[in-house]
Image 1 (tube, one colour):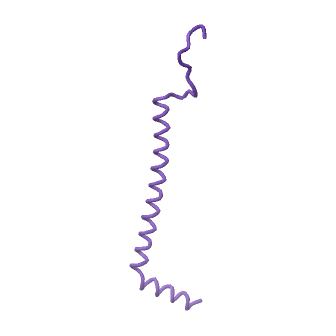
Image 2 (image 1 turned 135 degrees about the vertical axis):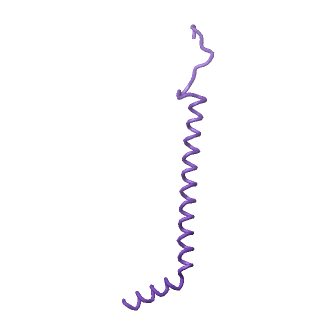
Image 3 (image 1 turned 180 degrees about the horizontal axis):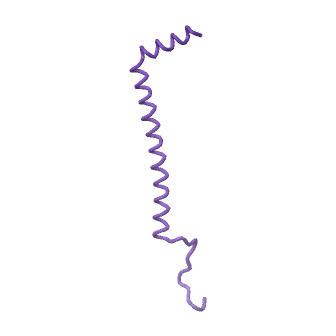
Length: 69
C-alpha cells in the first residue's frame, strides 16, 4: 500500500503539466456542453414567445363568420 502511494505521488510530480492540461480540457469541454445546452433551451423559449406574440394564445380562430352562420 505504501509503495502504491509513493508511486502515485511521484507520478503526479513528474506529470504535473500534463495533469494541468487535462484539468483545463475537462473544464473547457464541460463549459462548452453547458453553453450549447443553455443556447438550445433559450432558442426554444424565444421561439415559443415569438409565436405567442404574433399568433396569440388561442388554439383556433373562426374567420368569415357573420350573424347568420
